[in-house]
Each structure stands twice: as C-alpha cells, then as structure tokens.
Amino acid sequence: MRSSRIFPKWVELLITKTAHIFTLVTTDGMAASNPSVFLLTVNGQIEGANFPEYDNLYCKYCFVYGHDWAPTSGLEEGITQITCKGSQSSHKLIWNFPLETTFKSTNPSGWPQLVVSVYGPDVFGNDVVRGYGATHIPFTPGQHTRTIPMFVPEPTWKLQKFTSWLLGRRPEYTDPKVVAQGEGREVTRVRSQGFVTVSFHILTKDMKKLGYDTGPSSPLNTQSATSGWSTEEQPYTV
Image (cartoon, rainbow, N blue to C red; front, side, top):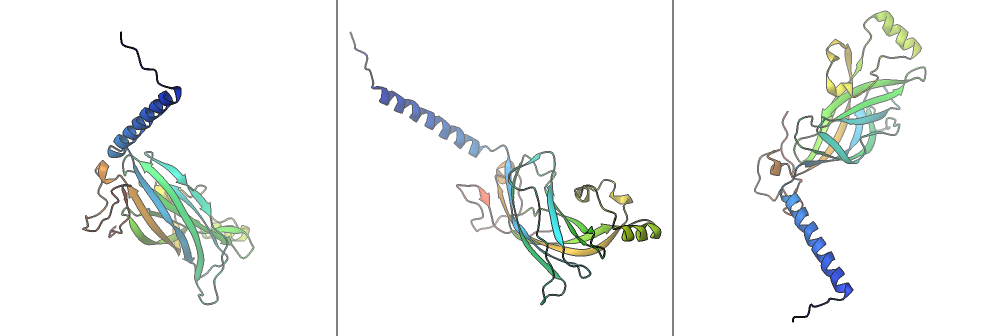
C-alpha cells in the first residue's frame, strides 16, 4: 500500500500563493496583449495670454469630452493665479499653470477639448469675463503649442451694452463648456478679443492595438515595446 506524502503547512501555502501569482501574471499578460481601451495622457501648461486692453487677469479651464471617454487621473478643471503685465512686455500675461490628466476611451469619437475662460476686473472693480476659447487636445503624441483665439458675447442692442457696462453685468455663458459644444452658438453675437497660449505634451497607449493610427510611421523607436506608450512628435494638421 502506497503512503500519501504530507507536505508541511508552509509548503502548501507557498504552492497556493505561487499558483495564484501565476494566474494573475497570465491574466495581466492576456489583458495587455488584447486591450479593450486606449489611454490619452495630457501634460503641459497654460503659458499665458495676450489682451492688450486688460490687465490683472486669471484663467479658468475645464475639459469637455464624449460619452465614451472617462478621466482616470489628474484634474478636469482648475483656475490660475491672477497675473499682471510685466515691465518688459506690455501685452503679455504669464501664468505657466500646469495641466496634467489622463483619459481612457474605446473610440476617438468625442476627443477631449480644452475650454479656457479669462476673467478680470472692469473699471468699477467688478469681475467680468474677458474671453472664451476652446481647442481640441492634439491627436498625435509629442510636443505641441496652441494659440487659442478668444471671444466674448455681445449684447444685441446698444442700450443693453451701455446698461451692462454701467451695472457690471456683462453677457456671459452660465456654463463655459457650451463653447466646445456648438449647439445654439449660431444665434449668439460675439466679438473677438485676445489670445491664450497653451503647450501640450501628449502620450498615447494602445491606440494602434485597437486599430487607430495617429500619425505616419517612423524608423525611430516611437513606441516602447514594454509599456506601449507612444511619445514621438508627429506633424499635426487641421
């Protein structure tokens, strides 16, 4: 009669734990080779603005994206410090406010946009909007700079314009995200006013594995074989 071998308790625990780790590694490896989502990481900064007629301004920002997108880390909105024009640059306002967030999605539809709105005091000290603007996050990995044209809503009648100036109640959007959506904007009267400069550093992961090509191929090593992150700068066209 054969006797059954009895292992010490610590050996049994070691065998069980090893098998569990092997299962996790196998599962993670399969998930990495067959991703169901891709990632978009946005780093950069709101560098500054050019508003020749105004000073002591600050900027609010937020991201607008489609239903298939979801943020995984970082901030979706924020507000900069108040800045004034330097003595060497009569028109330039410098914020250098950092941007850092990561999104995940299953398809590029509803690609994120950055919405910026600039505020500052009027002659009576009231805090009023000085401009709205929006730009799509660059589609290709690498370094990018965007100069965003800004605009403000205008009253329809001259009397309304004078009254809003006198009371410090300028026309403005209740939700700045409407700037990126477009619905109903065709009936809004606006006036161009100023520019905001934003720099981006874009990283993407697993887009090519899901069949999306964000730029022409290059002989350089543009994607890490271990991480799947793509970081090379590619030409961007509108």
